[in-house]
Length: 265
Image (cartoon, rainbow, N blue to C red; front, side, top):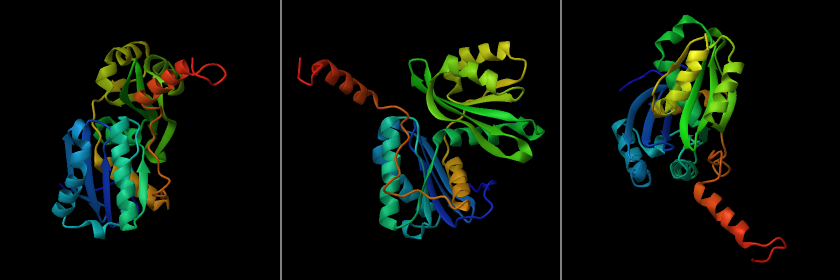
């Protein structure tokens, strides 16, 4: 496929982009500001085994090779702890080995940007808040808010975090004013809460089920490159927004075992 990347003003010649933070393993290659190749598959339990072979095959299908890459854009989360770690580790390793810049991209912003591009109503010029939702369990979501204001462009209104969904929707209702609210990502998992918000709000509220796509990671990565932004390959870290569940349980166990003066109970 050959999709034009619409937000970059100066193309980076050859960019590899990928994300493994969700059940979708998605990889894209951009050459001269255009998507030369893209693949998406659902294989959450096999990301660690499949990512590198998919990258190799996709570069070949795009008519390029690792030694011709000028940069790597990677989704840094939030999302699956293991998935985010796999993607960031591969990106850092490749960037170091190939001596090319790495650009970390919020997966939530990529979901929001994908929602904007899929939203046919966005051309009416009215401000819209795109709110990505990824299920974080226990009534919580990895979420943020990104605003499209037509000629005024795109901005982050509320940064990435893990939030209780019901309380978050109340906050959004107050912050968004008369702007439309468009929920993207795993919005169907929170349909009851979103529907309740739509019933009490006079301004439009919609939900769009969308998946992560590497072309959106590439688009945002190219924008950051154009602004002169890079990440240090050694310093780039995943955005987990919370410790992994196994780590939380370990800490709780340690607290139970350690007495008030540092000794074991």
